Length: 121
Image (cartoon, rainbow, N blue to C red; front, side, top):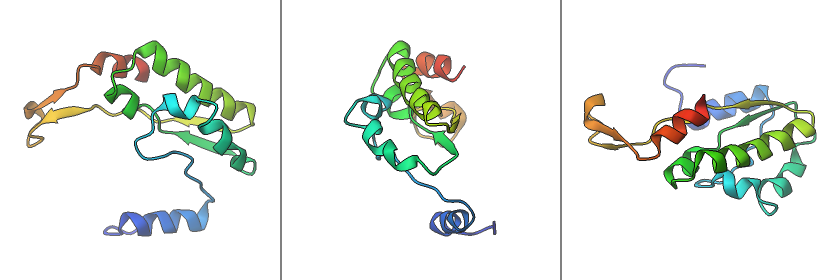
């Protein structure tokens, strides 16, 4: 893709080559998506897809959820997708920091950093 393309233009170029669908909601936790009223209802739309990229977890870490809670919810989501014959790829959950962000040393990770690192492992 060309350097300098806007995010919207990159999505348009990608969608021209590959069909894609975003089943997540901004600010949603894996906890909500794993619930009966969440992801399961929306996932009926994925019957024609072969791959799923799961990017849940950041909001769960920010909410202070435990490692076992996050792991259970993500496993439920991954299992549902695998059961629908999709190849599932899980994204690494990035660190959540506070501070000036001007330098790496000026940032402080949140209190739930250990759970995030353990979940990524």
